[in-house]
Figure (cartoon, rainbow, N blue to C red):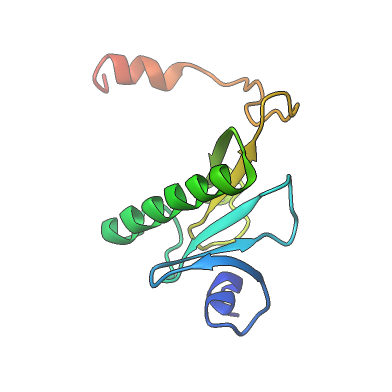
Length: 131
């Protein structure tokens, strides 16, 4: 079965398209989390940050930046969270690299930074240069 995002890029599946260029497409997600929520999707299929071509990644980030600027100017959002998950363990729901833009305003009571209860073992290795 073809990737749903590839199908959207080819206009074989419906999506509300906010904007697109030769490299990327910005769509309104099926499950809107907050006002202004958009998904930024490179038109070429890459599963994650690990395998995406560096040039395409750069173009995707620039496209994302320009969308954020436009949202700020048009709709007066004050800030943005950009979220990206890579791999099943990180809760990536579609195996096609994408970035969520979550526009924010002061006092919107959205907690995009939940308290995480992780360990510190990996940091000991980083601090000790892998030892």
